[in-house]
Amino acid sequence: MIRIELTPEARDDLAEGFVFYEKQAPGAGDYFLNSMKAEIEGLHWMAGTHRQVGGFHRSNCRNFPHLIFYRFDGETISVIAVIDNRRSPEWIRKRLSE
Image (cartoon, rainbow, N blue to C red; front, side, top):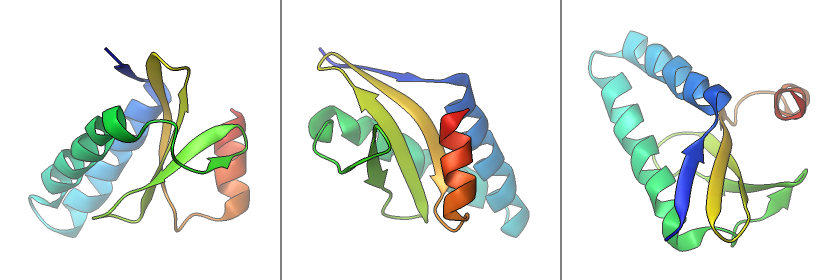
């Protein structure tokens, strides 16, 4: 069975997203986390099929303007980052190189 692992940085990205959306409207942070959980769980079926960018697979999220960057070795999906795609490309490249 394929395992999904989130790096500490990806967990921090989710927490940051929660805070951002919760400030917009009460409950929006929970909706964000539930949506991202569904997107990440969906990688079980789609892992490895997404476009590769900078050595990572990149999945576009449906309900929020976020990108999920991950690596897949055939057995484990390692979620590296969950990034708001409204960030500048330079910021995203820097974040992924950390």
